[in-house]
Picture 1 (cartoon, rainbow, N blue to C red):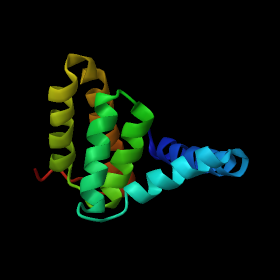
Picture 2: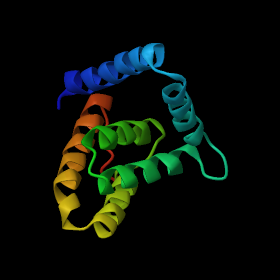
Picture 3: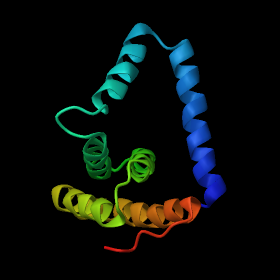
Length: 123
């Protein structure tokens, strides 16, 4: 996934979320609102919640969700080492079936850092 692919992912998500919210019923709109509310800072910081989202997404084997949470983690200043440790937790919780999704995440992390023009390899 090159820079254009990351941008395509972001644009697709934004476009489809707008469509869903414009056309969805009240339950759908409330779920989206609850999702947004849940990831706001509280007793846990936004960055910690995004790491939790990344871990859960890997256990649930949702690459779209992994990509979203990794992008958000990067935006929140989460280091490579922190994301990789969260993925290690996902691997232990989810078992070997999570391995392909951890591969996806490691590859995506490189692409996110390339896109951002930095390389957070100081682990």
